[in-house]
Amino acid sequence: MKREIIKIVLAGVAVFSLPVGCNSKPSEPRVKGKLVRILAVSRNNPAELAAATSVEAARVNYDYRLKVLKSYYYKVGNMDKYNWARDEADNLKTAQTFQWEGLPKIEPPQGESLENADERLLVEYALSARKTYVNAVAELAEFYDRTAPGSYKALRIRNMQMRLFPERTYMYFFDAEIPRKELKPVEVVPEADALYAKALKLHNSGKGLLRTFITTDYNKQRQALIHFRRLVNRWPNSTKVALAAY
Image 1 (cartoon, rainbow, N blue to C red):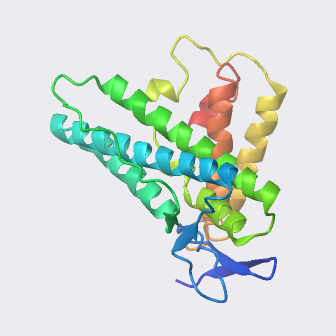
Image 2 (cartoon, rainbow, N blue to C red):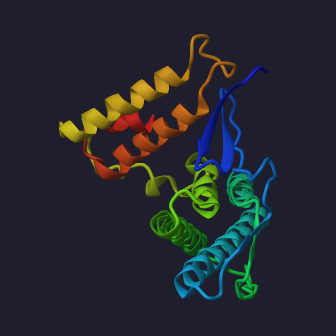
């Protein structure tokens, strides 16, 4: 399949490509054409060390919580949700393609028994771990943007954010994402209407001329999905909520 490639060059140091029309992750920035597999943290910089350690600790815990959730769904035979947890774990694994150097060793939590496990509690653990990880990565990205704008580290962490696709994360309970039955879509909310129009325009333009996977711009589709989900969560009584959820 022929792909259009958008190349982004920043600070004369790194280049990464964002494929348009294919549902693949953006490639990592490189230095002189080479991909860096090790990202070193200076132990003489306490702020950087703390921020990077928070990211790695959050990643390890997030990965562990998804493994526990995956094991639970395999045990009870819910293969749909098992696949969700597996896909989310793969999404996390492929978001970061480097190893940290200079961080203290971080071990995952101790294994826990799945005997009489509470699904909702396991899901809450996983969602909390995800939120902690996403926030930690955002804080590290902001730290590098503030202290070393345009640097390779700043580019690499922003790229890692882009590689964690939000549509490959799951709520596992539909009522956690779709409004409860007692909520009625009866309010005309101008902000919700505007967000719906923006999301719909992105969704339609992302289909391309042929409206097939060949011309689909997955970056636009991802952005549209984010807007639709935001509308559902923020304005559950809006008259546009049913369309957004659909």
